[in-house]
Length: 572
Image 1 (cartoon, rainbow, N blue to C red):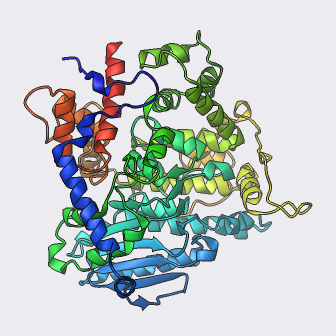
Image 2: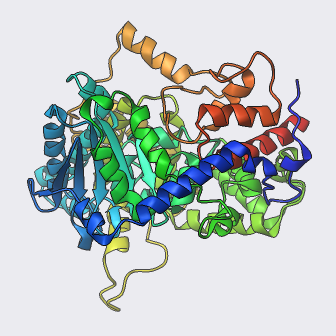
Image 3: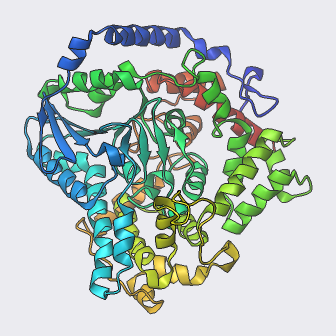
């Protein structure tokens, strides 16, 4: 049965039309309750707010501290002058604090947050490239030690629930991505069950701009984002607002920054035996959550208009960044920029509802091309292949592959883009005393000159092939579980990757975020728990998902945009 989209859902241009359905009684009731909750907490006196701060327990170095309050533990990154950039000592400290909290019978939740303007601005890559540039072979081999420790921490954070369930009490990880969250900061948060963004969030994985690639296990969630948005983010390294981070499912909740202390206090006050499921934590976060795109929100209309993940720009992202090669991606963006009406690109986009390329879409294509031109061509190819492969891998498999690729990138005998990119980004021109500008001196200088066959052998064909292709550094053995080849493991892995519905929705993945388009497709197809016994009309689909997700903010907006794009495809 073809999907019929009411005229209220349709748009005649790239602008999304939000119908009156968003003002349903249940939504209004929920909005009223949320406003009352926020007002109640914002009216607390300064004395009450100060009293809510948990006592400080200095643990390990001053750069990482442990806050204990009730049944909650907060790991506080406390290197604000460096925007909480993670060095090796901080990674080790975080690991030791995790050891303590995992063993604690009085801890139910763990919050990660940062002091000052950032959660974490990334890893200490300057130390890595300096070590990689040493003349002594043994010294160069130490360059990858940072990544081995970081990836082990990423594994433990991503599997915290599983690790603590075996200890007798499940512990839920909550990341407050309040402020700058880049690189290693994304890695700390990306696979946590609860990820909170605010109006202060600036989220990015810009590794391709320093000659590296999106490591820290980030390819796992990026490859599972809606459409081809993950490929777009990985290749461009573009920055996201908190609103877009939430819309994409990279965050589970959008909460005003000034309410985070209250949220932490509420979570800490939970009786230990009451935290028997993630739903308990989610319900508290839901109380404080709001819709950043609402016309009532600060800058809500501006955020809606600027988002490239809605309307025609989203259609362009899905088409261009879903093509089979980097060269095709670049070519399609050029077609858009030039409004080449005879091109395959524009003919395909017409089938997707874009009959006329707007100046907005042309400008988007131009800015995206400009961004890709600044990135390391070698890093672009490695990133492109890593995202493609990660779709069919588990998080553990992605982390093991990350360790191998980090070693290849750090072996400067194979290419110096990592060293060049880091020095360009983090040092100053000695002649001017100012930061370097423009494009780094990448080698190879263009996509056409990248030796793709050699990179395949170095990065994606196993250790023997990499050694034969010239890899000199030793790949560290990660202190995480090995990838098993048992029948039981393969069965569990295959079930996870197979999923449900036409887009392979995994019901146990990213449970607390906005519904993914894979989940929406499963609902439409009938394999979702909220599906009825008949094919639902669009408004019925939205109502069913809203009930299932407890009327999560921004859900209506996201589903309406998905329905509009789906309807345009079905017409052809």
